[in-house]
Image 1 (cartoon, rainbow, N blue to C red):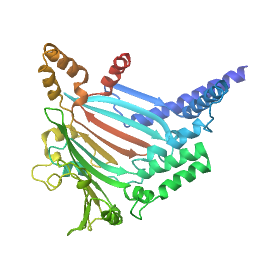
Image 2 (cartoon, rainbow, N blue to C red; image 1 turned 180 degrees about the vertical axis):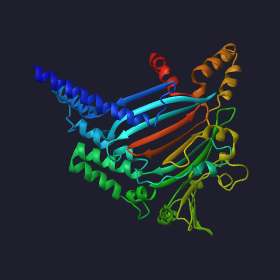
Image 3 (tube, rainbow, N blue to C red; image 1 turned 135 degrees about the horizontal axis):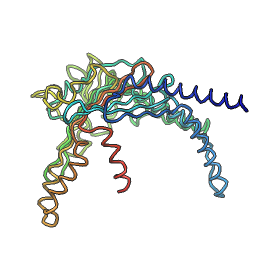
Image 4 (cartoon, rainbow, N blue to C red; image 1 turned 180 degrees about the horizontal axis):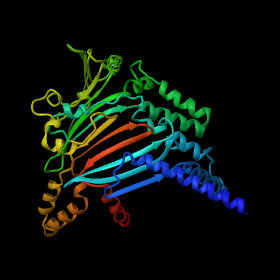
Length: 389
């Protein structure tokens, strides 16, 4: 009995030391003096939870006659989705100055990211600056720059289908990937390969007083120019034009949209083999006016970003004034519009302010920094209210 007790204590102490070590490792990338600090250790949880789900699923099959059994093993499913590579997650929030919080998160990984966790690449993926913010016009409401590996979605889908359906599932997935786009000789898998890599994109979203949306967008994918060359045969059967320019090819799909307010152009560059998709010829990197990166609002929220990262994202926030003005103009609710606006601003206003984030690898950790008008503490406090609603 004494030996058993000693062994149990030793195992418990070992587990606590292991978890403490993981927390110390995660805390290197967190603010321990902020408004919130959280840590969750997932090591072994996927196997335990998956085993329980297997048992529950088995009970469901036994209690529901005629229920079609699906050969699924939940621990394996978690691994295929990439969650098995997560050892632990840490979060923190800290107010940097009035109205600006830094929300940090760290995911400690066991080996290289797998499954959907590999969507933004791995430790070997090159980091770069926030190019999209430097190229975007000042009125852009969103931007993103970074590595996007669409192959991670493809490989995860194949793994899950193979797990659930066996060789037939893998064959079905491979068959779909091998199909060519009608009218061309390019396969779906080749498109996925070509569009995997460095993405820079920015967009503008606005609404009229009648709540009619308006959109502009510009997207560039490095090394994907070959796709347009392979789409040339489509011009024989679809209302599109493909022409040669000084720098490459220009495909105009605008006639297929059936609207005069927005176009769809795909252009290639012989210089860097990039593929660029845009909606307006007069709105992009070469349009008149200052860039997003030069605006006062962007500089205020982004001044603490790391110089390079795997992926950056920016949101210009959302202006609710048009909606509240419409409320104020309605006689039935005009008396309550001011109160509703103040209540909304108190609860959710900070979440609609501009925000910018960066994600990068540091040793065995995937680290994210989000600079915003809100803190994770505010989000957690609102969860009970949202659940009650």
